[in-house]
Image (cartoon, rainbow, N blue to C red; front, side, top):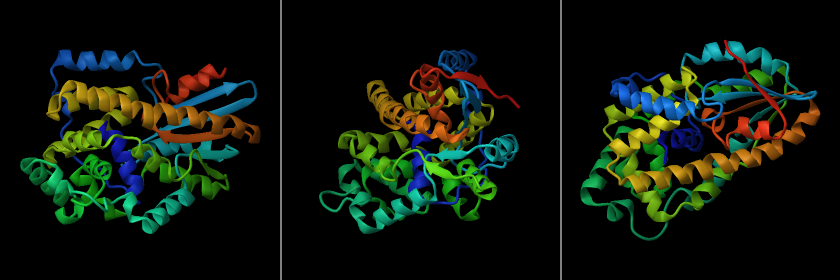
Length: 330
């Protein structure tokens, strides 16, 4: 499953202040020119494949859409300079999860440890091959999670932890915030109501639908040296701030195919399931929240950047509802 999607969910489940900007080599720039060209071509073929700030209008109805990056980065300041006045002018701000949803999620996890921990059956140390378990134990220790604890986690949760680079997890205590939190704080300061796009337990319900064997494969796909994980995080962040939203997806697939050690059919199955469960189905559900909200006036919507492009992306779905879509450039 795409590591960048899982990283966003990990940031939510851990309730972490997101990490300061991590450094690393840009893996995309290391690729052969013909490989880069192929990935760029695939990204360009997706509707609305480039751009982070958009306006959708249908008659008097208007929604401004901001594609976010859930981890912190000093480059967010420039985006907030653009987005701030748009937030102030909105009647309502919609986000994936607001403070109430995050608090409800943490409360649910506290009431029911089985949501994150396997309370029966073999541990991950017993389910993985010895070499795989040793690699996982080392990766968890790099992220500040003792191996004995990681062995008892639900497999999907371990996969989300692997999706956060060691740099990100080590820096989490810095107290810096991702773009979503900055949007919420700006709206609160301006007196603009903030509302969630979905219930607090949506991610839990999504992961419950993933077959157990695929969850184990998600772990295998996420096992990589910490240095590569940091490089991957830097690469995806660079693509985001270049507003190459669909390229994030295409490169994530390429990286999984070339570096996970899994068969191509397994990677393709994970990617397809991720796109269906984590993006397409949620996007369609969000349209059912967005359209009624427009009766209250102009809406500002902030959601992960991968939700914007593609045939089942938010922008295409709004277009299908009769909205004219305009990219707002710096």
